Each structure stands twice: as structure tokens, then as C-alpha cells.
Length: 375
Image 1 (cartoon, one colour):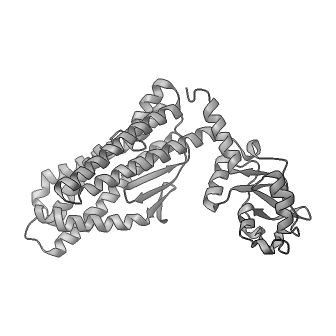
Image 2 (cartoon, helix red, strand yellow):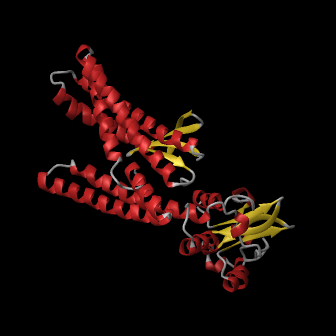
């Protein structure tokens, strides 16, 4: 749901489609509310132009904020692929967890500090020479200054995975030496904060009869959803770590022939072995895969005459991994292709199969029996 608009320091800069919605909303809000109250008796074109320029400056500031995070992450040896600007701001896609609490704290704190510096510089310029500047320039400077300061303070709310929440997690992590436990605590704090935001939003709407409180409700929902997602990502990242597909996959793979009827497949394979899918082999080559979902779509009256070849996912549709691939990458492939299992191919030969169940079991065992991490 994002489009790439450029690259900075090897990092892809993307715009989520929701960005266009919020850009228009901010421009409209400024043009019809804030700007007329601060600069009365101006033309409608003035308000809309300044509104658009101010909204653009806001997201340029957010991009610089995220680049600050990414710069520290890269210096600390972390891999950054993308920065995506979206409805609620921006996010740097960091492909792994910080290696220690200090890195986490530095990486989190640099964003708000950057916003404070940007806001301070803009407000200082406005204070010193703002009176001598055209209203169009002065209005953008003042709004940019205030909004960056506000952005810094908002991001320091201790709600994970916002910057303040990451600083909180780093502090807890530094004390208990356990990343997952620290993330759970930070996530629980975030859930409380999200509830407070939503309650304040509903109170505002029902007490004052305006929709302004709806923003607080959206922010609360965003914090709640993001904290749960952040916790899940941390658990998965820590559990899988550097594990490869070969360490998790099933090596004794049950395969089926393409000319087997669907009825035979049900009776002799799905009913006996309880697997949810099987690679289809012909002349020692994987030519497809068939799953229980594919079988369910076949009419019961035709299962005797329809073969595996007729309904299987063909080789062109097949998504595979190699034994040396990371297990986390295999999970990403499953998620992005909406499949539950991947054949493992090495030198053109089928050597195993890895499923969501294999990965989930690994995550569960690692979470339950994991030693203290990242001392």
C-alpha cells in the first residue's frame, strides 16, 4: 500500500496511500481553522497555499526525524530498508532488534531531539526576522516550529513502539536484561495509555458535542494496535534469531503424484497423515503443491474424476526457500504470499518443507524456555 518516491543513504523513502488522505486533511484544517484565526482578512488562496506548504513542511520534518533514527541504527550495525510516511506520521523499517539497551535508547531519543532542534531553529528564525518576512513565509515558519516541538513531546509519550516507549523499554531492559519481558511491560504501559486517549476522546465528543475528540480515539487505537504488533515482532525476532530454514524444516516430506484423484488424496493422504498440504512430484521434480484448501474447493461429486494435477498450484505459482535462508525470511514469504507452507529446494532437489506450524512451534518453545537475553 505504499509507493517509492526516492532513496536517501540507501534507504527507500515511501509514501503510504493513507499519507495523501492526511495531507489533504491537514491542509483543509489549517486553511479553514488555524490560519484564518492567526492571519485574518487574507484571501482563500493564501490560506490554502500556506496550509499545503505547512503540511508539506510537517512531513519533511517527520522524514528528517525518521532519518535521524535510521542514521543511528546504521552506525550501530542495524539494517534499514525503508522509511514510510503514513497517516499517523512515519516509521523506519528496521529488520532486527537493537543489540543492547544503549543502542535502543540512543536510537529512540535522537528522533525527538531532532524535532526539538528543527522546531527551535524555525521558531528562532521567526522570532528574529519573522516581522520582516512576507506573511506566507512567516506563517509556515511559525507553524513548522510549533508542530515540531509538539511532535517531539508527543513522541516521548511512553507508549511503545513510539520513541518514548522505546526509551522506557531500554530502561527496563537495562535493569532486567530480558528484551521480551521488557517489551511486554512497555506494551502493557502502552495499552493503558491508549485507553486513556480513547476515554478522553469519547469524553470530549460527548461533553462538547464536537468531533475533535475523534482524533484522540484514533490515536488511542493506533497506539494499542502498534504496541501489540511491536510486541509480536520482538517475540518473533528474538525466537527465530539467526535460525535457518534447515534447522526448523521437516526433512521427511510426504509427496504425492499428479495423477492421483482427489478422492484418493483425501482417503490415502489427508485422512492418514493429517498434513495440510503436500508437494506434487513428477520425475523427481517438484511441479506444484496441493493443500487442504484446494481440495475443499472441489465438488464432492467430482472428486473421483478430478486429479491433483487439475487443482494443484502449479510450479509457476510455487514459492520456495533454500535451507540456508533465514527462518524469519521464510515466515515473511508465507505472509506476503498468503501460504502456509513452503517447499525447501537445494540444487533443484526437494530436501524438506517448512510450515507456519513449524515456525510457530519454534517461537513458542523459544519464548517459554528462553534464557535471559542480551546481557
